[in-house]
Image 1: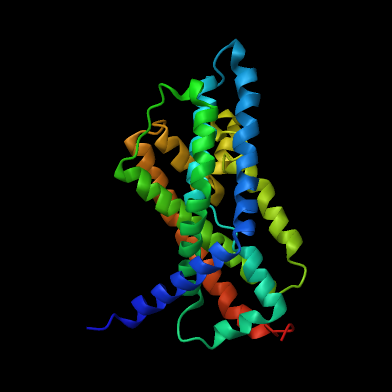
Image 2: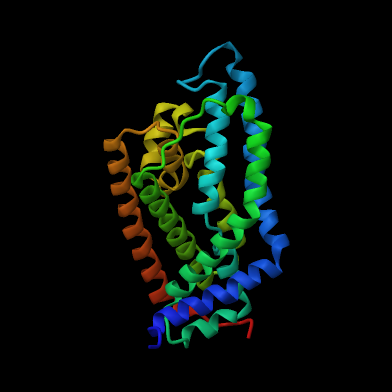
Length: 268
């Protein structure tokens, strides 16, 4: 009995892009090192700052655990595919997606899943090194990995994928896309908790963060794994993620609909 067409398509995508990720390991390592730099440097900053006592309920062990958990969550959640989308649109490679017998979003999701597999394999040795490096602060760490956590990780990942896919499609309207992509990272660093835990931010920043997609990508899953969210708060965060998934998907559909009308494929 043959497999359904959609299953064969996904298996083909996974095979192709896992091989691509293995072939071009250097690019994957560079992205991992970009994320790793924060997880390595920031714990030492907060360890020094918390010598006089806890800061907003975080002691030195909590800060170390936060950044390591955030790094783990980022490996499973964070996507940066807008760069590839922007490049393919600018170079005209994108044209082939307009005539393929499957949706562009299906292609992106499968390509992204393949990259998750490769990235996780490349990341594992680094995680072992960091756990050993910070072990003196991690001895009593207790983590929570209930089904709610995995639901939040999946929700955060879908928010990230859909947001960056929609962002990438802006390249169909303008050739000056890199500055827009770079601008995306400024609020993301602060409102996702990647640079500083959102709990440590001023009240107005925390309020602002809750209304952005960045908060639901990393800060929420990280705090859930650390056991810093109640069950009710996790359900509320799932609702926030669902809302942003709907908004980001609507944005993707809108940009896809109007973008195809103005796309010229100048790189062909």
